[in-house]
Image 1 (cartoon, rainbow, N blue to C red):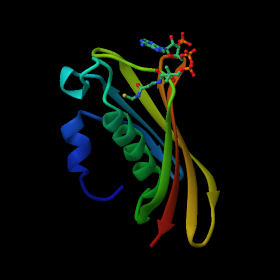
Image 2 (spheres, rainbow, N blue to C red):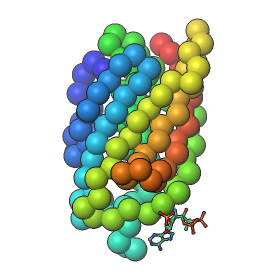
Image 3 (cartoon, protein in one colour):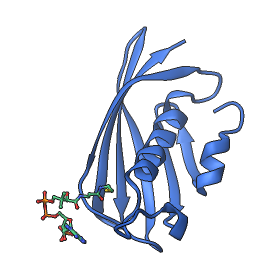
Length: 120
Ligand SMILES: CC(C)(COP(=O)(O)OP(=O)(O)OC[C@H]1O[C@@H](n2cnc3c(N)ncnc32)[C@H](O)[C@@H]1OP(=O)(O)O)[C@@H](O)C(=O)NCCC(=O)NCCS
């Protein structure tokens, strides 16, 4: 992906691997990522998955923007948990790309995110 994702840096999200149509990112849940219940904030999990979506859909010189996304939060996580987000391209049309992103803690799926990207 061209350029720097400032918000990703603020959240402490690290790129592990990016290819055309796929990406893997990592983060460790910090106290500042948690909500009033002590769980990882839904907005943080959403942003984590969204960063993987962005990396996979903007590989190299490609430019794409999110048009529609959805997320299911399947398991709570807490401070200290190490999470991975893996994006996979499902469809690659002339105009739109469809991506599936899974957020995991070890072998457990924490969230499933689906994204529709408009290719510029
Ligand atoms: C909403 C929810 C409780 C519904 O669960 P469900 O479909 O009925 O399924 P289960 O009750 O089997 O729970 C799913 C998993 O969440 C865990 N879980 C549920 N409530 C939990 C809690 N209060 N504390 C810790 N773990 C919890 C369960 O242990 C289970 O994990 P496991 O399979 O590894 O044992 C569950 O999907 C969930 O907690 N999602 C995350 C919600 C979240 O964090 N949202 C964002 C921030 S508000």
